[in-house]
Amino acid sequence: MATTTIEEASGKVVIKNIGLLLSGDIDQPILQADTIVVMDGIISAVGRFKDLDTEGAKTTIDVRQTCVAPGLIDSHVHPVFGDWTPRQNQLGWIDSTMHGGVTTMVSAGEVHLPGRPKDIVGLKALAITAQRAFSNFRPGGVKVIAGAPIIEKGMTEHDFAELASAGVTLLGEVGLGSVKAGYEAKEMVAWARKHGIQSTIHTGGPSIPGSGLIDKDVVLEADADVIGHINGGHTSLSEAHVCELCEKSSRAIEIVHNGNERVAIAAAKAALELKCPHRVILGTDGPAGSGVQPLGMLRMVALLSSLANIPAEMVFCFATGNTARIRQLNCGLIEVGRAADFVFMDRAQHTAGKTLLESVQLGDIPGIGMVMIDGLVRCMRSRNTPPATEVPVVVH
Image (cartoon, rainbow, N blue to C red; front, side, top):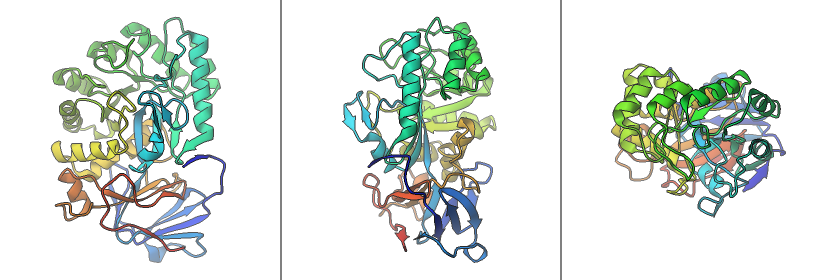
């Protein structure tokens, strides 16, 4: 259900009887705690039930020894207006993705808008409109960080300053517009960074009409904050060039569902070999030609855990805390002061894995029993995942 951001606060929420608490922090992926206390949508305490003040809760949730993790953050989406995507003429895709455990989405550009303006006045107007609209309207309660202009030739530093002053914090994928040369992109990326706007660059072959190949040399010269879909969206650079990007750049390594899976695995392994797993973030790059993937983030976690042989609890950090820190978001980590955005999971019924983490390591996606955003329950048992073995219960 689509909702505005203006609604009743959660009040005090106690989440107890947690069997596995994933932190989102890649330096300590698992917390030794069984209870979370929330006050008005913000985590106020994490620890053992016996040690915390759990009296007077407006809502109490018995997790029944299942897993609680930060809500997943999709680092790469292409929204347009509301919960509709013209790319596939589909309604409700954001709400459906929330049923896949996603509580925050980050726009890489509102590129699928029919007749998208490419003049400088128009592209700025679209970005500001998208930023405002998704700030005021949250499909399924999902936080969509939108308003990501596609940069075009002729923009000046003043344009970036104007966008920043209007509340725009992101650039759409560099390379989807007329700015494709490394030296041009580098100048605009620097202007954006100066004014507090984070940049993402398209990597690989063209994905939509008007886009083109962005090769490793352009990516390195532009020096955008995020190497967008390093495994291609859809068509990837060579595995050797992707690994070279991981080594020669210090920027975020974004791996997406709608890309080359073989190269996704190679990029994740390269980051581990370079001892920089904190740089890896995950996204779907949807909606796209391949459609909408409500379980795309969970599928990426299972793919990298099972085929790249990376511990599942670490890969969940790629999809939560890593992204939160790189994108400067107040979610994605289980710690006091962060937003109370959680996904409650258990191993899917009849998986070969004996635990949730083992099942993901074997390649199975978990079952979702509940999703919470800002301390408010947004869905109970997911309509999209396989049924979880156990699900949380709202005691009152």
